[in-house]
Structures are given as C-alpha cells and as structure tokens.
Length: 371
Image (spheres, rainbow, N blue to C red):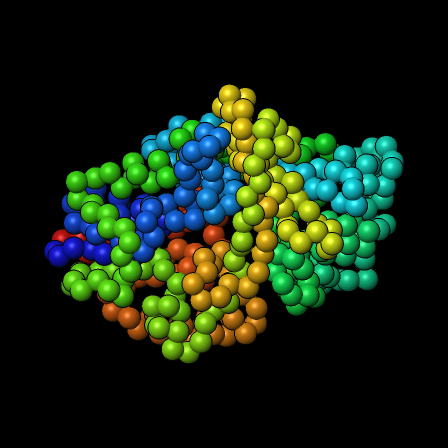
C-alpha cells in the first residue's frame, strides 16, 4: 500500500495519522503553517514565560470517557475549571447565568425556587417555538438578561442580526438556579500541562509518520492511496461554486505585570466595547501562574473572514447551508478522499468531538481496507 496523505496537523489529522500508523500504514502529514496543532497551537511567550494559546483559548472538556482516556495517553491533564466573567455597564457578573448572576443583576437575594419563578415570569412565553437566536434568548431569560449578556455580544461575534441566527447556538448554554459558575457541565475537564502542541508532537511521534510543514496540498506532487483532507472544503474545489463564510478573529496584545484580570476570560457584551472578550493566558495554567511576574492578555475582535485570514467559526446561514450541500455532493463523488475536521465538514466541532470523529473515521477506513 502506498502512502496515506493527511492534510492538516490539527487534532483531526494527527489522530487519524496515529491510528493508521499504529496499524502499519505509512503516513505523510502536511500543513501549510509553520507549526503543528492547528488552531490549538500553544507556545511559551518569551517575555513572560506564559503558555499562550495562539489562536484563542482552548479548554478541554468532555463527557466521552474514551476521548478522555485517549488524550491522557499523550499528556498530563491538569485540573482546570473555566469560570467566565462578564463586564456589563461597568459591573462584573458570572457566566453562565446562574443564581449569583440573577441576584446581582436584579439586586435581589432570591432562593433557587424564587429565582426560577422570577425568570419564568420574565421569559417571553408568547414565543412557543423559538426559531432564531433572538427568539430563543427572549424565551430563555427575558428581555433584560438577553439584552445585557447576549444581544450585543452576539452582534459583535457574528456580525449579523441575532434574528437571523439559528436558535441552536443559544440552546447549548446553561441557565442555572444555583451558584455553580463552572462554564461546562462535562465530568472531564482540564488543561494539558505542557500545552496542546506538545500533545500533537507526541501523537505524531511515530516512525511511520512523516510531518511536512510549510506545505500546501495544492503543491504536493505525489500519488497516495488515500487522502484525509481537513482543510477548507470549498478550497479543495478551488471555490468553483463560491466561498463558504466564516468568522475570523483579530487579537490585540496587552502586556502587564502581576495579575491583570484576576480571571482567565472576561466577556464584554456591551455594544460600545469593540472587542468581544479579553483573555489573560497565565490563568489557563493555574498550577504555574503565580511564578510569572509578567503577564500577557489578548483582546478579541471578530469579523468576517476574508481571503488569507484564518477561518474560525462557520456561519452556516441558510445561504451557506445551500452552498454546503452542493459541495458535499461534489465531495461524495471524490474517490480516494475523505473530508474531515471543522474545515473539511464546515461545522463547529469541540476538541473532544473532533477526536472522537477522527477515531471513528480511522477505524472505518482500516476495517474497509483490512486484508
């Protein structure tokens, strides 16, 4: 069997490469960037010593025991709980919306039962079947909380009216009537002790895997038995029927001494603030944060992704879904190519889902091609 080519050295490509290599296949992993780990790439900041998430914060969380065991094969996962704060009209609140948020915002001291009844009274019960993000938010928490925490943030993050975004974006956010400010509900949560790039280095450390950086698939002049493509789906077809739309992020670096935010992530939902949030990266590694005298944080600005930008979030509007369906039909006709990952399937995937899907794809390929 000739070599397998894997386009992209993020979680999708790296996991598939490792699974195939362990079964004796010869694998070439290429990535046009000068580093592995895709958008999960981490590095030590030279000035402060802080481990920086180059493309924005990545917090590992999952309910999938198999994925948790898999990631722990290649790293030591340290305890980490994501506790997000939000500055609204000059006051700081806890997210996701919980009993503390509700009591602080409305100046009350309600019990869980009282708060639940209070929010139910605020909610727009006339909206029976929410279809848009806006309808879901109003039905979810009522106008005051929706306008304070969701409306402005969403407009900045997505660049469109919340009334045309799907309700599903908001449905996954919790609303709690206790004082639990853990942003995620998953039983397994943590941060890799040595960063995400170190994980990918270990996954790709196999004698049957060659990694070639600074190499775009379009310029690889070799024949392969099969290609696993985790690049942009529309790019593979040279955008011949149009471009799928993404949001991208610009980062503004802020440096200081000591503790700048007192937390890892501070959201800024107010529409007057041009950025969506600011993240102080030393707090993503609480086991070592105290030893760093200097600190570094990044403000995030969201905008539409243009040619040459790094794609982050697929927009998946109605027009995008129609275009996606056409590309998917073209992809199904491609022989010897499997489209994987966030870009290859044009869907937002958390890291644990990405790993699970990569394991499943590799298993299916091996079973199909086993002698």
